Image (tube, rainbow, N blue to C red; front, side, top):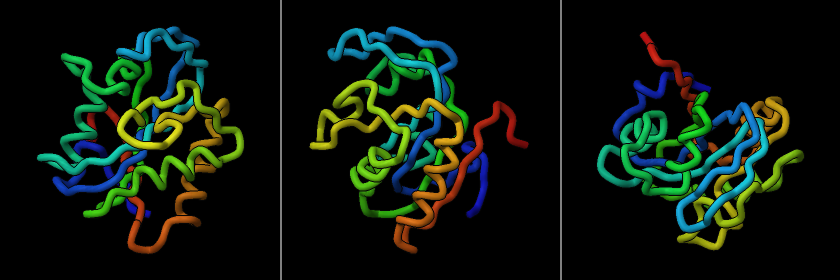
Length: 162
């Protein structure tokens, strides 16, 4: 699996799984969802990037601080920090399949039903892991379950990736 920095992401379309960490339990207002309790730990947020700028534009928005909260993840990002992302370049949308796969991982929970999934039938696109080892399990799971055309790239997030 190839490893890059988020700042090196190409301007292509695809699906991503953002990896985040919330250090302390927090009640967070998530737009119209209202106040939601989030336990500390690792989180996965599954999405797709098919607009202008593709994966680079979408991931850059997620790692930066949004000036205006538009998506559920924008509210959550005010409290959690991004540590990396798994991406696959594709002209097809795989986010719903990835969300389903993530929901079946042992130790995964859904802290807020419908989070990131107001435009689809998925129960959620945000998943919580109590233990950081869940992220490694996700990587192995994705590599084992995804067809070859969905080759994964892992993107590190650091302030300076030179």
